[in-house]
Length: 107
Image 1 (cartoon, rainbow, N blue to C red):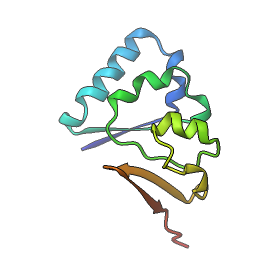
Image 2: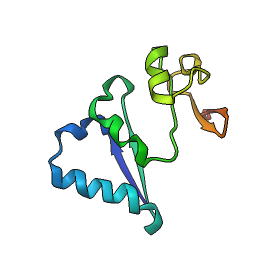
Image 3: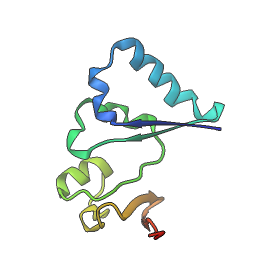
Image 4: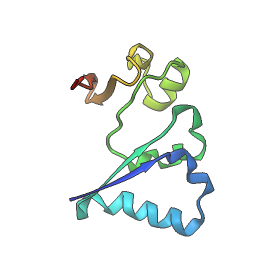
């Protein structure tokens, strides 16, 4: 298994078409070949990245203070992402429910 990390999906608008095409292939076929893409996105910098969201199956959210922006990203007003503790909590949707997780303090 290979984990592929990309920090900053919001920069995708700066990529050339060849790189975008190869990236789309990776997102669509990578997991079946045991390559798991893990990407980050600054929620205030969505830009052209939103068109890529349909290629992802799992979304993990951190704190998003702007409720309208959180609604755009999650498609639901029940996520309450503004209540998460920044850098410590995250949330994901499982079926119709929102699950919250804490990052443990190991010190």
